[in-house]
Length: 323
Image (cartoon, rainbow, N blue to C red):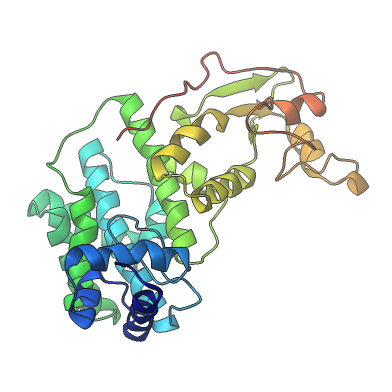
């Protein structure tokens, strides 16, 4: 039975040990797995631990020390790096170096990480996801003075990899690749939220190939690719939805219809972006007042600006991101 006294003891243990581990609670409280696991929702309700993501919980920022936070961020980056390249291997590509930069747990070059994980670990040696994660963690210790891969780190990597592992499956279907790209994008945004880092608004361009984004054309010509809903606005929407408890796949599915480009002129772009004091609308990173995600016209910014355009011939379908 979960009592206030037991919850208080559990809180003291996980904070003191800096480890929200069910097995730790089992050992220290001398209780079974079920009761120990049952304490986690209570600790989550008291904002001591986070929700479970990819099989792991973390202490919340209030209770997590800087050293623990640094270690957790490193483990997450190692995992996200090997997962990213696994998916690139399945899709027959090498990955955008700008997206690689977001994930990699080192200052070493994007190319060196890609050559090691995608080239050596996967293509040459055929390692599993966990083997690649363990290998990358060890390599970083030797090459970049990264944290030593101790038993706790190895256990955390094993849990993370177990949630994502599966047999290698080549992927060539364009629709499937697009869905996976949106999921990767939202995973990056969640990664930045877990690490309390800022997310780059250009991430949409880095994860989603231009040919996969529906594109319309302004009637005045122009070569400026204008996101009809600003990327910074979409980024903040994604992060807010994740904070509300939406899953990565739910957010990826929901945000996809809003990612549309219209090619316009530079002067039209300037009019959208500049503030009223400079003769513009001040809509660089936002939508018109009272615009709503549920009912709003995604082209509202262009219409307010009086920009004539032809929308994409084929708009993005609303599909489930079951990948």
